[in-house]
Image (cartoon, rainbow, N blue to C red; front, side, top):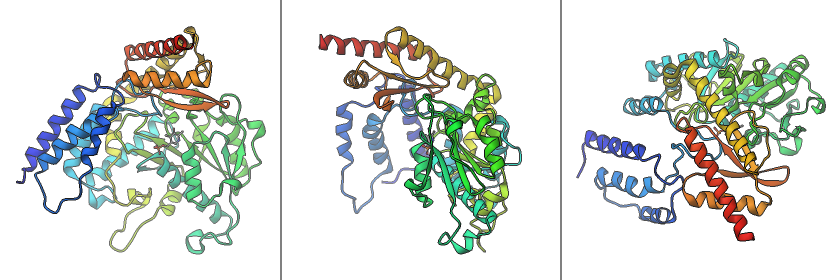
Length: 456
Ligand SMILES: *Cc1c(COP(=O)(O)O)cnc(C)c1O
């Protein structure tokens, strides 16, 4: 009853290839039949085993059918990149290795490649060369990592040892966040024990950038969280105006650059991030704009010793150097997430990454211009790859989204801006061509016309 390993892996590869070959043609969000069929999975756990080939067939026949084509060209939801072929291929090979990348001894190859990937990341993002780069699962986990290091560093500087004495009775650490800070920063702060009513909120301007004139006062017991790439508008906090003053006050500056930090890879877009190199820590995702598979993100800390001390997990049986990845992130055991980063950077080079990022931004600009010409209310001025749009009413906005989803040709999510419903279009898949953008525009125009006809 057992299938050989090679039979199973070949079967899986063949099925994966078929899926990929159809990615441009499938519905972006599955239809109701496919979703209803997911009930097939609802079996009780069997006592006896069965052939793996049968499990794989079920996974593909039932599972693949109800997937969302986030790896396709017309998924415009959240900020979700697809997976570049070289990164997906590298991951496939890595699955055969099944090496953890906690320590050099768990995989000399992974440890070496993650060190090089980290160096190249600092190079392409032009961040301080001595920084430590920890590869984690998500921007959420990596921001948690950086903010842990931040609080620890400020407490130690204030004469308190949190590693030994914990937090009860510790000097108060203040945290400043943007009014538009990402929910995962708030989550990381909550996990760390910073209650929401204690956070100091910096007001933003119409674009969603912190207004420096209304920044709360800073001191050397304050963590400031700024962002590169607001999740709706794609805008950047004014780093050049905020960071030098925050430095002078002795505050710790953390940057959430989940997708927006990639603007630094482009000579044309880089100016939005000017001054961001003066921060103490940065978070950036691989699985969004770099188009690695999930889960891939980086925690970058200017002072490597502060990150390595905060994340240390050395034990008699598992001692590492300050460079060991298990001493730089939350995870102890994990896949080498730096390998797909290395594979993409090596294959695309600086120019390839810049071209991808710039292409998405010019597609976003074209999309916004076309929608404005067609009479849509495009809310943001489009500095990056994000476009937020609304109809003449919340009902029309919602109806357009519903009809667009029903078409199966595109998918995008909703948000709100200025208290009104809006839909959010994010361009971050390497597969998205100019034709895909034209198709999106057409779907939106048709959806709006049919709504308006119904109203007449
Ligand atoms: C997506 C996003 C995050 C969270 O990233 P994950 O990798 O999904 O945890 C944080 N900040 C911003 C600005 C984002 O867009």
